[in-house]
Length: 123
Image (cartoon, rainbow, N blue to C red):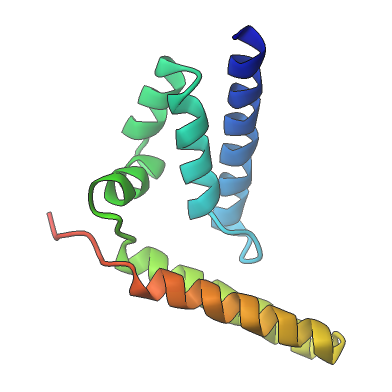
C-alpha cells in the first residue's frame, strides 16, 4: 500500500510540474496533466488533493471538468492556438511531410475533442 501511494504521489507531482510548464510552453498541454495529478492525489494524499482543488489556477479547471465535463472558453482558445502553433512551427522547420501528416491528424482529433466539450456555466 505504501508503494502504491508513493508512486501515485510521484505521478501527481510530475504531472503537475508538466502541467505548470505547459502554461508557458505551447508544445505541452496543461489540462491533461493537471487532471492526471488530481486523479493521482485523490488516490494517494488527501492533503495534496485538497490543495490542488483549492489552487487559484488549477482548482477551477479541475472543478469544471468534474462537475460539468467542461473546458473553459479561454482554455479552449489557448489549447487550439497551441496546436496550430505546433503544426505551423513544424511546417516552418521543414519537418518531413509524413510527420506533419501525423501531427495534423492527432492535433485535429485533439482539437475536435476540446472544442466539442461544453463550456462551464457562467458563475
